Amino acid sequence: LQIRPIVDSKEQFNENLNELPKEDLLMRTNYALGQGIASEIFDIVYVSGDNFNATQNQLCAYEIDKINKQLTQEGRNYVLIGPGRWGSSDPWLGIPVRWPNIASARLIVETSLNKYQIDPSQGTHFFQNLTSFGVHYYTIPHAQDERNFLDLDFLNGIEPLYEDKYLKHYRFDEAMVVKTDGKKGVGILTKAGGN
Image (tube, rainbow, N blue to C red; front, side):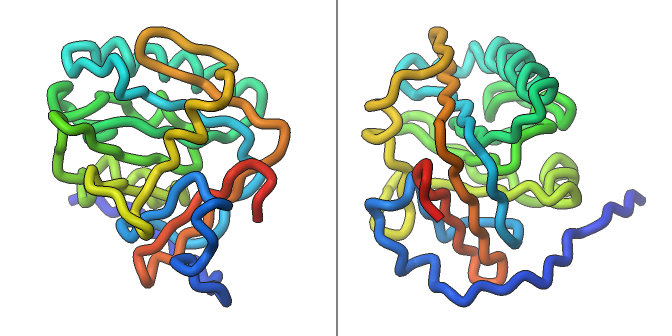
């Protein structure tokens, strides 16, 4: 039997996260886990769907680990976005990272692609570790709408700080803000400079 602490944040929201203007947000989801606000986030590490290949998930995990180490040394938190189950021991289901590989991520987002739609990994030991450290965890479904979206047009319009075949690392001059209402299961990430 393993016992892990569960985050018990008393932070309540006076605003309805589903009513915030879409143009101010990089993402919104009704599949959010966690509670509270994470601010002072200037970086996004994104596993792009453009060249995604599940056979390369182990390589992606290695590259994410390198970026995480660099960001940790710089004292920077970040948002991690990519397809499939994060932390899966089966690299065909997602990118097989472990907690030390992503320890500076404050928001982890599972996305899906047209030919790569995996059930969310909520309930695993990996997920329990994340929640015990106060990491917000979102799922963006393949069928996006006003309440469940990731603004890829916005991201694709920005020059990445670093890019390889599978990953893009974005850095912004102004901070992004994560807000998660765990009771309602709603989460948002503002665009840089938003609040």
